[in-house]
Image (cartoon, rainbow, N blue to C red; front, side, top):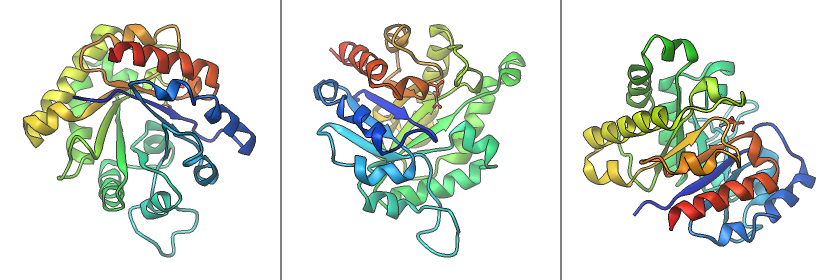
Length: 248
Ligand code: PEP
């Protein structure tokens, strides 16, 4: 019912030459799982449609459709050059670019209006986890940043514990399972059982070839949002293969 999704977040990495990494995903992208690469803005147009089965997405978008917003890119512009997804609310955007839940909610609405699917990121800091506030924090982020109108088609939620992003530390299967069960229950409560059960939930935070299978075996994990390990196709392919195996 929920097609698994392997999503790569290239962050601010990659040049035209790096598109060869996308080309290398061609075979892995023919499996059961959906494959998505989110490169920096300048690479979206040349990456889109380049490899059958590899969808392309942006890493943020502005809430307005156009205007005097120097340096920004609208959701419609992403869709126009071939993106089908956009990542919103990544912790690096929240922390470094001061994006708060209300900004993210507005971006999400704009993305949906442009026909993009949204990968909405939520996650707690280590201090919040240590203080046993994880579920409260995540519940607040979901309530604040997901607008009305979510469906299993237009929304994917990515649980990304901030302390696990780019650190080599990964949440344990128990920690991931607890959070993903919670996210699904919250989605069901707010949007109804149909939406709650059909929305895909990704885990993100130092997913590597060596830990992917264990993470994909956790219930309510429908795939991964992968940062560092998505930059090298050899690693990303192993993660996609693990997800394809978990889809059987
Ligand atoms: C991310 O940035 O979304 C991410 C999960 O990064 P990494 O896989 O490198 O931890």
